[in-house]
Length: 196
Image 1 (tube, one colour):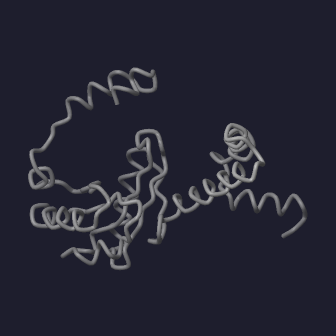
Image 2 (image 1 turned 180 degrees about the vertical axis):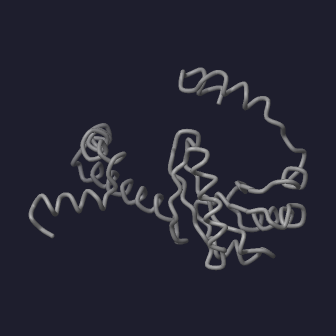
């Protein structure tokens, strides 16, 4: 946050608020009175399972537990929990303070009310929740990786320099992506060409 302030990207008051946030000494004290818990340890299922075990033994039984995994199957993580109906994926994107979209990934056993509560929370803090299924990379990363593969192929095939490649995305079709998703663009192109 301090780097963002130094670059003029964030209000200095926000940085001072972050510094004043209380820190817990351990997982148990951090979750003992929490209603919603975000797990964001590194992507090793054995480490995540140990963290979930501590959370479940010390957090209120009504607490929602969200994993910020970007690659591990949500159903596989849910299988190790005592209360899997209160568990789901909540995939944030970097930088989280600016990126509005957050993927919500229910496990097959997740209670729909759990997702509804998470949805309400995210909207209350100004985020845009998107409910997606649990597959490798979920949805946003899969689409992003396809873009990366094609961008690299264009450079490798000599169609564009890396700089031209990036500029083609930024100033051509990328310019409209904040307003229209790829399927909306396909629909609009089909209607424009008279193909329905």
